[in-house]
Amino acid sequence: MLQRSSYHAARSRRLSASSATTQRCLSQKLQPSISWRPAQVLDEYVQKEARPISLRQLTFFGRTLTEARLLSSANYVRTELPVRLAHRIRDMQTLPYVVVTNPHISHVYELYYKAFENLRRATDIQTPEDNERYCKLINDTLVEHLSVIPRLAMGILECRELMPPDAMDQFMNTILKARISRRVIAEQHLALTETYNSPWHFADAKTPQGDPQSDYVGEVFLKCNAREVVERCGSTVQQLAREAYGPDALIPEIKLDGHLNATFPYILSHLEYIIGELLRNSTQAVIERHQHLQTPPPPIHILICEAPQHVIIRISDQGGGLSPELLPYVWSFSKGPRTTMRLRNLVQVPKMAATLQEINAQQPEGEGGKPQESSLSSLTSRPPNLRLGMGLPMCRVYAEYWAGNLELHSLEGYGVDVFLQISKLGNKNEQLTTRALMDSV
View 1 (tube, rainbow, N blue to C red):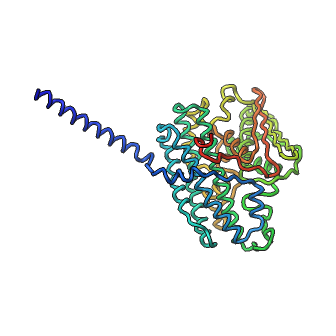
View 2: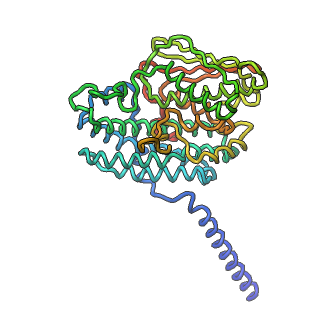
View 3: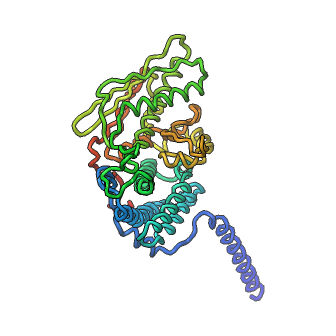
């Protein structure tokens, strides 16, 4: 009896020691990934709804810029950013635990929580000096979050077997639209602050007198011309193609037709990203399909159509269309036959810009010590062989953000037609989830 009791006691000690070792190993392994935080503060912000805005609201508010309006803009951003961040943090918390502990997803989670804690602690902005300090905080946050898109994309690809693909794509679409929404209001306020501090600004003027960029109100370009954007993006894409395929490569011509004088209010960097990425895809497809021929490749035709409430841009190429194995996955972030290649290429893109401010933050300095400005993102300017498999889904996210649309029709063996629809009046609110997904049902 004594021996049996001693045996059980020794076995119990061994099991306890083994359990403690296991727990310690698990704790050491998972500790860097997800930190525990009290939920009460986050719950308070999750219960609030985001307040969507339209391009027209951004324009009217920033058109007559006074100190009171600037401070009002700062306090809107101060109260809105933590709410929008809290909703997306809660969405990430509802993912399967094995997904959240993925190193890429947890990296984004920690960035979001850090930003949430920093931004929610910002006090009421009452003076221009308070505003300058707040602008530095949001600018530092914007720069720190440059790694979000590639890390999210890698995490989604690595976890593609752990969640249904449709649920993963819905999560990715929601979090990217929310990211755009935060950057829009933050960058708009930074631009308004820059305008207010500029030497040509007068507080009682309806438009900035002497300002060479008076067609801008913050980040909103009031007279965005589709033809000019296509020509500028087309020139950049053709230059990239020459650098990639050699100076003797035959580059397809870009031909424009339709309502070439159509203008509308828009955030220029958003439109340039979409057009740049679509032209990049078409140019690359035409070159690779016709490069064995000695004759000039067929041109890329672009038609601009202006309707009472929309501007529609059709891009037509003869690049052979999409193969049946790729066509079902063109709008997906997590599905497709080339995930290994996409992961390998994403590793080469540690930071990914999708707006003008992000580009300027990471570009080398040009003459006079100023950043070399470019209106195309680093996504569009990547080498042709760096295929990330997320250009079209990203374009659709940007198109839908301002209540637009993006459709693709492929004729296998011939080419692709892409239709981009843009809301012309600027009166549509940003399309974002105003609450956490779990609370919006």
